[in-house]
Image (cartoon, rainbow, N blue to C red; front, side):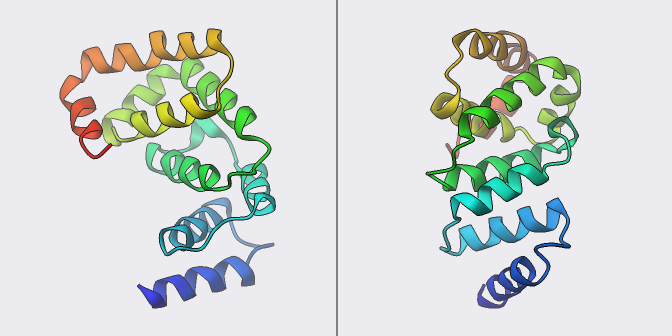
Length: 149
């Protein structure tokens, strides 16, 4: 575990200006899993580097929300929650396929939205057009993803 942490820290510091979004995300994720915290400024840099939310896999979206969620003083939580909810509502068919591949995305997104989304109309839209339809079509996948949560 220690070499992976050192490698991630080295990558984060050594390549920060040149690292891709995915490299930065991966490095922050590994470091968080090994006890290092993330500063608000690092979370802001990571958020600004997101290429396109709808282009992220379920796995990468989970990692992103995990990393950003760890930055308690991150000032863009509300904006991230709004953009995630809007993206999933607008691109529900694409996300439905992604959720089938990585069903644990749904509880992690829902948790992030509960904590940070303060638009009740957008939350209702997310619930009625993304969560409920997916749950109805794939109850076993949802139940399996909820077990660890």
